[in-house]
Length: 113
Length: 117
Image (cartoon, rainbow over all chains, first blue to last red; front, side, top):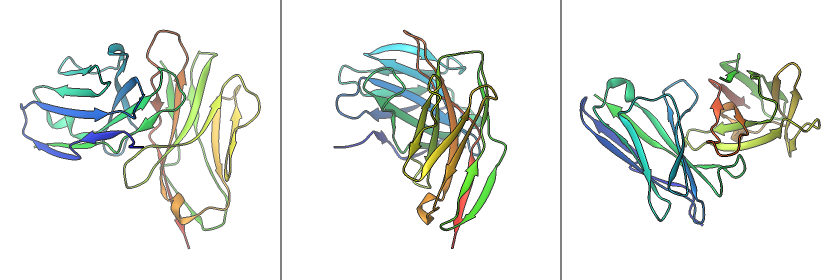
């Protein structure tokens, strides 16, 4: 079975641009969460979606948005990119919104120049 | 808000030896989970071990075990018989349980573990 798939793996954008990151959860998993990991720090929670509804949002500005599709895949969108948005963006999926069975993808490395 | 503190930025251990990584956390919650995740250079976060706060017995997974001290809010990870493949960043994480809200993980800043020959 395929694990959590994220695309692209690497991305370089210019300040002010928009970016869309994609995540395909493990088949059958209905919950998707997004985390931002700045170099040298632990991941920080951005969003969680369960059954296509937003269940929670971390302390991130409105430039960050996300959605979950009927097939449970998810997109993370970031508008008006800042240099500080440079980070590894991790997606995690699970069967339910529970602490069991979280599986992380390998992330998208975003560099803003 | 919950906080997780890992006070050891880097540690080194020789192959086959035992090493303990420290983690403390701060919360007013009574119902929560604690985790240790491993992040190798491949970047994927891999679950090492999980502990339910209501369980007094310390969790073990093969060579990995924890020392959970709820009153002291301490959650250390012991790796026995260290292997070269254990070289990675290790993150301690906290999750509170609350029905109907996001089950988000709060991570510490990590400990870089190097296993040497």
